[in-house]
Amino acid sequence: MDIKRYLREKRSLIEKALDESLPKTKEYPSLIHQAMRYSLFSKGKRLRPILALASAEVVGGKIKPVLPVACALELIHTWSLIHDDLPSMDNDDYRRGRLTSHKVFGEGIAVLAGDALLIQAFRLLSDLKSREDRNLKLILRVIKEISEAIGSRGLIGGQTIDLNSEGKEISLSRLKYIHSHKTGGLFRVALRSGTILSRAKKEEIASLTKYGEALGLAFQIRDDLRDKDEKSEQRKKKATYPALLGTKEAERLARLSKRKALSALKMFGERGEVLKELAESILDD
Ligand code: GRG
Image (cartoon, rainbow, N blue to C red; front, side):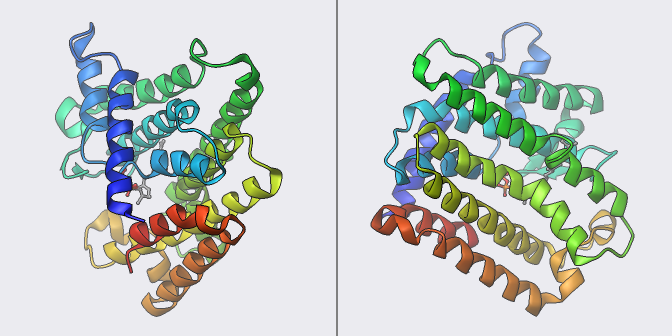
């Protein structure tokens, strides 16, 4: 399968749907719409929406009913990045190859742009006019799972423990908690949303959940390994897999997680090929 072509096609679908999902820049108050679009349309890889669409295809579902959920996940991801970059969090000046939102628009507008993206995600998820009634229960289930993945028991919980661990030595289980909640949760729910909306069987949902969890962990360790030589003061305060386990052990854990992700695809046979290739391209080792 030609994964590069697959990614190009899916990205173009997603970009168009994302554009339609937000108010135009000119709409009053223009400043907030400008800030929302500035962060959303910088160079994101769109991994979470692609995973949601691919998971639907793997279980024989259609793309169209999953597209609003895929976009909502990207809006949510962008909210988390804007807020993660704020001076009170990671204090980063650059994101996705350009200045962070607060550097361009000021801290107040950056906070609001993140909030507005998060709220627009739920507006999109609950936009039922084009949906069939028989899907309503499934959509509610997906909204619930996404809320759980990003609330105080999910992403915000992970960020809380991360903030509270800065500059301290932490255990491996705490590090795992931080990353499975900060990063893993959105991967996991992306895979689950696509399969739930495609009316997949329980065993299929369970296997793709395992794939999402293992992929999320491997992705986080790879990201830590790539950043490990970065010397910023903020980065040095952070606990990472290579800092805690050493580079070799972190690499071993990343390989192990990748193998786990791939073995969760066994039951799908050839249909799982796209997720296999996606894992290879995301983890590129
Ligand atoms: C909501 C207050 C608040 C905080 C958010 C979850 C979180 C806390 C922050 C996530 C920020 C972060 C840097 C997480 C590490 C995972 C990671 C490498 C994210 C970047 O994901 P990519 O590579 O980014 O998919 P692109 O730009 O391609 O979308």
